[in-house]
Length: 219
Image 1 (cartoon, helix red, strand yellow):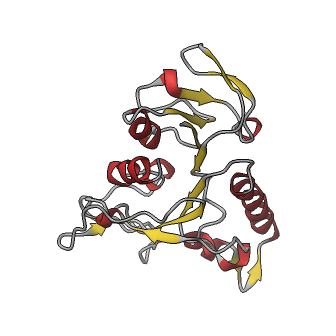
Image 2 (cartoon, one colour):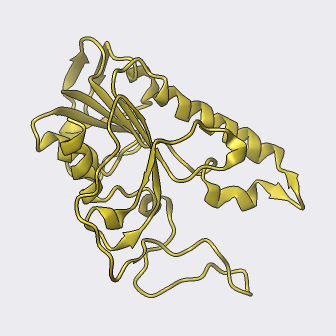
């Protein structure tokens, strides 16, 4: 299968797909951290979505997709969509116009993946704010369902793909993946020993167990 993994710099899903013999490419505006520049496209992903696309991977090799992609798996930015940012959407009960405008831009970008000309599509994001008005998601998954002792609720919007089936459920020793967004009395974010910092790359991490399940169950 020819598969586009959009907005993925870690290459976790692209690598899992390649290990199973598929022609998968990660695409992001930043360099990949997964160690395979020969599978990474560093550019705006939108011109590639509907297939019939010419592009270069980061090793300089040219590629052409003749026809549509067989599958698109997308991880669009969630900063202005996630329910975790709802506290920044209102000030004294009033919607912040600039924040709302950015949320609508993020929604339009999100919907571009969900409505792409492709038979099989999966779009991933955290639980969204209701005010954004995204379509209902198909399912929500957690790392602890796929062999990782962490909570990090992730929603999946699926088109012509089955919901993921848990592969290894962990019931003990499960903790949050990153430090929470709440602050202490001094206005500093609370930190807990052993948890990762709440930065965009840590929050966006796709766990290997989930990437493997995507590669095995969707192809």
